[in-house]
Image (cartoon, rainbow, N blue to C red; front, side, top):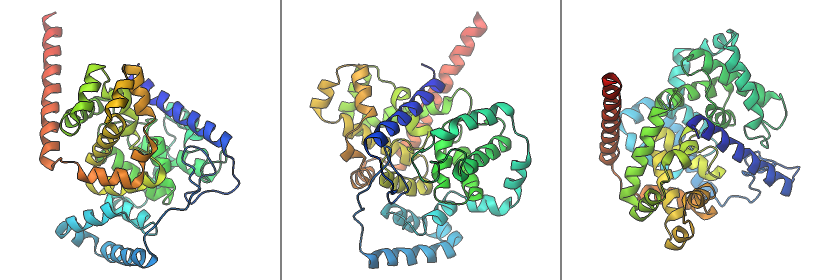
Length: 361
């Protein structure tokens, strides 16, 4: 199966899961995140910290946002610490816009989004975008109506990006990322956040061939050998390559993988610390799903192992478990950098050998 087909089939599975879920639980009232049903529906009220603590955190974030450049240049560790605690919902949209650099892009190009929308766009990209609109969180209040305002804004954001970056055009995995952003901010802000995420955080992920994604799969495998050697041995034994289970995790930045509360917390850290947060989340999921010896014993082949990874236990995807174990991983910045350089050099050497063989033929 090609990487492109793998992404599409993963998206289809998510849509099927949503359909199954809403058929078994129909509601006329959205949950606290705006879902009427589907895999993300969570009617239970979230256990929260006290209102006074929330208020204090909101005030700290507002002060920080008012002095953003100073904090990011002189006190980044404080910003990171507050992101890891969780950004208050009331300031999350603005915080995300500032964290990812979307605000700077918006200020630098105040009229460009509207100008991009006036361009005709590539007909093939426009057709592909329209085909995918109904797939994106179809049971969320913003996207539940066919050709409603949410779907119209999603089309506009994806079209604008395809015009801005014709080399990439439209890549299917961008759609859930853009939809997720639109749930939290106006279209023009969501667009510039998508630009930053696509071109900086996930740089190269949406290029033809997906070589960067394959390299990062190798990095994930190497890091797993350090953090969960028994799980790594199991995957190697059954030839379970990262492309088979982690493609959607990385391309969609976990928007199709995690429960909503967990996703929000992971994105608070992702937009602050970068793509290594996706690696950490993936490592925790892998260790949690395949860590118990009895699970590995039952997953006695490639297909059985993939089934476990496609349906991890709910508890390991929970907000508290996931964030806690991500922060306890014994990995340093140097570990990530070492594996990045090693896998990049390894792939470069492989490419050079291939070229040498082709030349000799």
